[in-house]
Length: 199
Image 1 (cartoon, rainbow, N blue to C red):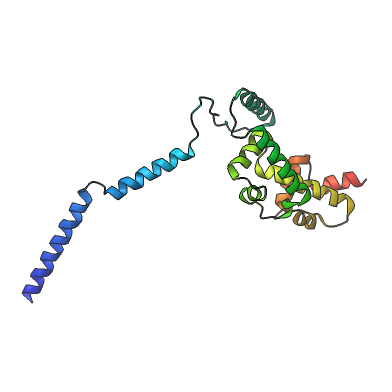
Image 2 (image 1 turned 60 degrees about the vertical axis):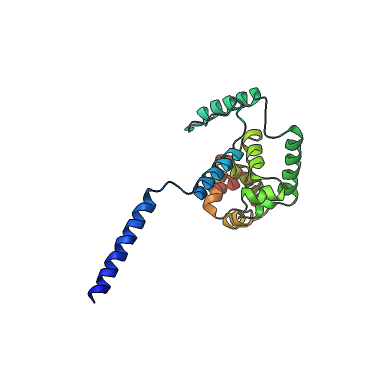
């Protein structure tokens, strides 16, 4: 029995020593390769530095500040000599978006996201984001909701359906989301807008 305890103590001693020595060893070659691969992947994601990199925007609190910021952005964009999209690519994206939004009405899908929209025009999300932000000066949901709201306004004037039903059938996930987007675009709530237009 005493011999067993002795062997267990010796085994534990060697395990502790092995553990401590592993902690003090420099990283293995595989770890270095993994770090190099991560750095290489980061380098691939970077665009070449041109000195014209866009500075991050400050948070905008009111509409007059937003107009000033938008004008500054437009001026900065005009001064840029390089764009990630050529004029031919911009025209192609414009035509494809027009087709999927107006003809196919992809915006009726309440689960629509940037990846799905980019795939539907056979592009990628980087180009789509760039096009929406730098060419149209819109965020993704502002762009999509514009089409949804136009559809909803047409339905509100031509039918007697409840606004909740219209919101859901135009691609919004809820009435509240629709009401907020509608007020942002039209300056009033959908029920008030409908009553004013029908008088």
